[in-house]
Image (cartoon, rainbow, N blue to C red):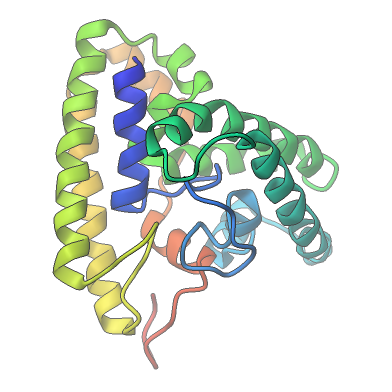
Length: 248
């Protein structure tokens, strides 16, 4: 299971599978390319696609705008405290620490979000979180508990993650992308890059779905809910450039 966790976290770095959890790097604040709109739920709630899907009202949107700034700072402090004593060049140590730290930050975020959003909105936001996380979701406690994955299945998921990670590296190299969750600066290239990155994740997820029993597929459907345009949400949350006259 530890090997799977390392593979999935590394995949989040190379393929750019960013979810509500803070990316594997020191948080940079809002709008940076290195993380999910600066990290986690504060980036997710900035997405217009998410806002429409979750049915966030104008009043809630105004409150979330203020909240996201406050929580971005809080999550940075939590990240800093959680990583205290760990060499930032020690990728292995960071990856081993990250799941528990991500879970702590996510729990804190949802506790505060519950004071702004209705229960059904929070539930939907969590479903979107799982969709955005993609393969990385299988390293989280909630998903692991719900899926009840066996050792053989875990090994197959690790193989799928490792393949996707390699493909992600190759894609980054092809487009000259460096850093965590980076994208090309050119809007057209970025759109092309996003489609290829999404295809990598889709292929890997297809392999994972092939390992699931009927009950596990049902659990996965309940965890993810109705599909959302993951690539579009990621691009919006990261403040991606738009080509004139074109959608992301």
